[in-house]
Amino acid sequence: MQLIDTHVHLNFDIFEQDLATVRSRWQQSGVVRLVHSCVHPEEFSSIQAIAQKFPEVSFAVGLHPLDADKWNNETAEKIKSLASSDSQVVAIGEMGLDFYKADNYEQQRMVFEGQLAIASELDLPVIIHCRDAAVEVREVLQKWHKLQGKSIRGVMHCWGGTPEETQWFLDLGFYISFSGTVTFKNAKAIQSSAAMVSSDRLLIETDCPFLAPVPKRGERRNEPAYVRYVAEQIAKLREETVEAIAAQTTQNARELFGLSL
Image (tube, rainbow, N blue to C red; front, side):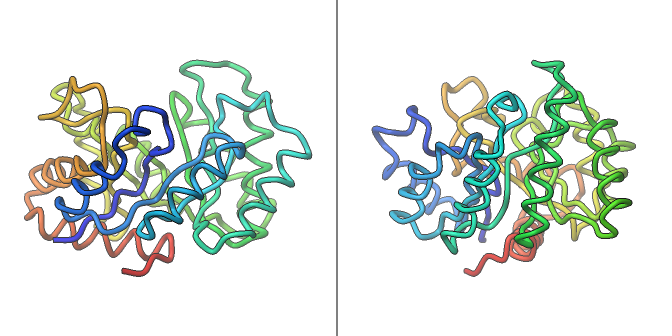
């Protein structure tokens, strides 16, 4: 059984001492490819070093919405340049809107639209972070489609929306990626969303080191090997085998990010 973890943060300090051991565990769990996200382009060199050391890791470059105050013309040019500099870059992001921890809507929107433009120019998919902002993210994407005359490929990562919100982004052509939150006891809306996503738009992730899934919830660190528990929970919710979920989500990740095995 092969799995692809479509959203990780392995360059954080919490992995510094034992990343090789962590890699052994994800290999033993059947994780064959990983997509490393980026919260700020200053991370690029550390993420690139991991991808060079572990060839199963591809990565993105972008600016997280909670860092929107760091955006300027130089940042935009840097993201574009870095994305063009390495064939292992498979996406722009993570980008999007987050109104759970911030309320600077106009600034976040401007940064979001700026990165959509970069992704469109480079023909790369986007990794979208959306927290307490589904209505606004939908509006930005709809506006983009209307003004540009073309849609953007991408994924709603670590998805936490309702089935109605989920359908909005499916209708816009997006993939929906579920993390360890889908295993949480009270995450009923997320679980309902995971049950209704069309098979060809379903992805899985850990968002490690955050959000360790049941039965690892409570551990200080999530890791890629645990994406298996996300697959198992989604299989249960959809009344499918975990092997079928693994095969489908692996195929979907390969198609979105252009990954080879």
